[in-house]
Image (cartoon, rainbow, N blue to C red; front, side, top):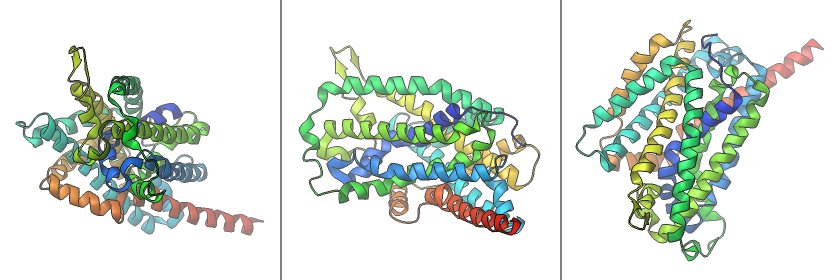
Length: 368
């Protein structure tokens, strides 16, 4: 196998938790509020079935081809030529996604905390840092995710607890004032995040306990959903109808924490845990692009591609958008149109699953 390292199903679940939630915890509340208003806390619940379905499809494909990733079994299912074409499409979508993620990271850090630092420095340093982790392999990424998770989750709970004195329940009332439709519309925006759970098709072949793969994948979806629900509830209880005025409401909420004029200005703490989670997310997507490219090219080792692909990602990340306004317009179109994450996270795996199922059923009947 091109990847010699192994991770546990638990490490995979934690890795997926960061891969989905790292950016979502900041930007989802404001993004969803436009459609769902005070019912934003319901939207993650309606969107979560997409995550469960993505995990299920990826797991079933892995049962058919236990030692292969999607780049490999797509050729077994569709044939070499069509499999290569589909693999190329998949790689282009993943490459675009990871480039946009690096742009989002750089744009937010520069706009909120380091306005006098060139964006190329912020993105370049993160690319280099991620390259070291990706070069270490999947086992390194699994251990890093396991190291970051307890700190990330603990600090998240501390921030929530410290915000409780400032919440007002009437800001989220009336619940379902206009029925289920607003919260359902808000869930459409979240498909961009929940469809990303489908990328576990790159991790399942390398589990030490594959029989637990679906269990911890589903558990990861559940924990992400609960985290988003709690985050959205806290945000709406704090800001109410002005939530849409904030680009990252949860970060803004942390600035309101002040206890006895001693414990205040905790946005730096939120920023620290966000960067830690985002680092794991970027590493995960960077890794699957590198691994997928190596498998598509039939290479024996993926490590030689880490720096070249990292350089390309950095260049494309710098050129992704001219400014935040152009990015906002793009994300609005993506959220209401064809989402690339929905294509590579669910549509392509589902298509492969149905073709594989039909082929195996036909061959089984012929064998009988």
